[in-house]
Image (cartoon, rainbow, N blue to C red):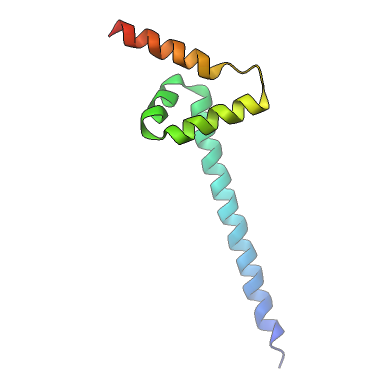
Length: 85
């Protein structure tokens, strides 16, 4: 009887679980990125609940496109909304 035969199914199962976990993590991160990318209100919500995530969103955008002004536009709009209150 070979002992290596038992390790192969475990290794295959481990790889399968790892792929599923990676897919779920990717899907979740894409969902949050997409919601922040499309909605200034979502970015405002993230500013108060998870500022680290908003900062990461801005940094990724600025790295991908050096002319990205989303951070500045958000700051101007939020300052304007504060004046209206």
